[in-house]
Length: 83
Image (cartoon, rainbow, N blue to C red):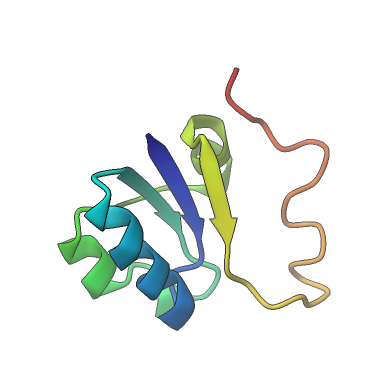
């Protein structure tokens, strides 16, 4: 299974550790320069990609961003999902 992790800050990093333990392929995207690329996540075998590509290839997407005006419509009706 391919899992998309939107933002790999502290919480996203914790989730990435858990998901890596299940043998999933991990696609990541970071909201801020501090969270992308996260060296710990890279060591777990994650692949950083652009958000549209992550949304296109991931079957499960988990979002770890604060609700701010800049993130309010991060995923909207125009997002591309697999299938």
